[in-house]
Amino acid sequence: MPFNIYDFSGTTKAVDQFLYSTMSPTWAFVVELAIVGIIILLVYAVVGLYLVYAERKVCAFMQNRVGPNRVGKWGLIQTIADLIKLLMKELVVIRKADQLLFNIAPFILIIASFMAIAAIPFAKGLQAVDFNIGVFYMMAVSSIGVIGTLLAGWSSNSKYSLIGAIRSGAQVVSYELSVGLSLLAVVIFSGSMQLSVIIESQANGWWIFKGHIPAIIAFVMFLVASTAEINRGPFDLAEAESELTAGFHTEYSGIRFAFFFLGEYMNMFIVASLAATVFLGGWMPLHIGNLAGFNHVMDFIPPIVWYFGKTVFIIYVIMWFKWTFPRLRIDQLLTLEWKYLLPINLVNILVIAFIVLMGWYIK
Amino acid sequence: MNSVGKYFSDIFYGIKSLWKGLMVTGYYFVHPGTIVTQQYPENRKELKMFDRFKGEVILQHDENNFHTCNGCGICQLNCPNGSLEIITDSVTNEDGKSERIIDKHIYHLSMCTFCGLCIKACPSNSLAWGQEFEHAVFNREALTKILNQPGSLIKKTPKEPKAPKPVVTDTVPTSNPAN
Ligand code: SF4
Ligand code: SF4
Image 1: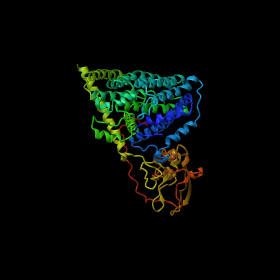
Image 2: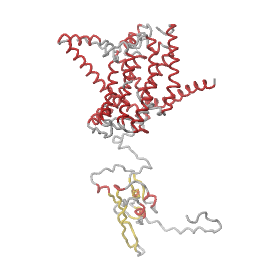
Image 3: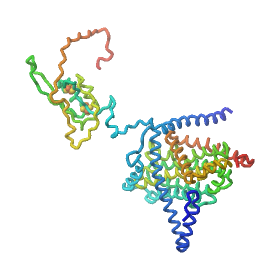
Image 4: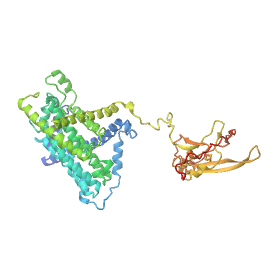
């Protein structure tokens, strides 16, 4: 089986051929689905757990603390222990809750983020589905998650949950616009919505460099708006521990709570990978124009390392936001979106369209 | 025009102040030396508690095993939780008079809320806060302590001549005699 750390398409093709040659096409298809599903599930669990760990460490260092450091070396298996604890907790049944909605709400959240992962290109040839409308698909799927939040708040039949859910609804509806518009910037630059094409178009430099100041503005806008979209601090009004206890998941316990928790971190991961893919070239190594020597040296670092490096960097920035800024009030939140982000984004799109029309960006 | 200028200056001021905040946390993140957390069981040897730390109530003894408690019982009366019990004894002193001395100054650490009223109330400043904090025991009885050390004695201070009484004059009217 050919295995190449620089290009996974050979490996996946070999697996594909092997399966189709050993069993009937229907079974081969089913087995392939199962393999992809299990791999994504594993990635999901491991990445989710270690993001929680990373968050706790980052926040601790920013607050002059040490963070988890007792379970395992440097506390590395702390979050796994926490998960086991949560698995063994009682699932409290809320008597006045809408049982059906209450039970499916965490799954909607998880499924939304799960679907988004499918379209993420982790490395060359390591992408479950490569839609020709990848960017659009990611946006559409990631906003399904808010339905989970709304349902959770509505069905728990508790005032805190409902306020949290309604806030989250207002927030996502407004910030979705800015996320879309800032992604549109790169869609205009690269002329495609397909994630793999967007990555290929960055072979001679990432869009954040090639697109001049408008691309940088779009990148910052995307970071701010997507932080708000995934309900993370400083925009975590839906949870707002200090005023709403835990917002929409106040009534949840045990593994259902863990689902919300994991879902939040996976959404952060998805947003960070989308930002890395669209603005920072995804798995594409750092290339500068046609400096062949420099580009060649950069090619020695495997694409998967590039991908995770960029994603981790953006995740760190998002965590940095959370542990620095105080939470916004709901009116400030809406002011920020409708008075600042949206107009700036619209003007930015106009400028980018003009730049692309005149061919003033680095091709 | 003014409002347009304000719009943009708001944006730049906002970004500037946010950046300032980011720099503070960013500095902490890359400087592990700023961590203030004490790693407790590891640093047990060199750990020194702070002066104002309330570990437990102790009866102060000097190096010759003398304390200043005369067994008046005021601390017992002041303790809101009944954590203190004073058991006194009487001895005959060198003048041939019978005198009250402390027999057992019993302190129930398990009932103490560390309010500090006993320490404030003691007229002879015999009590103080100790710095010991590792109080975990397997048997509740171990938390009942006798504060006066075995064989300790009350420190006799030579009697000072009484200070002259302050002269009370009626010329200054008191504002509220009821208090
Ligand atoms: S500190 Fe308060 S509770 Fe404790 S013994 Fe003294 S008076 Fe009682
Ligand atoms: S400790 Fe102080 S208040 Fe308590 S009995 Fe002794 S002298 Fe009196």
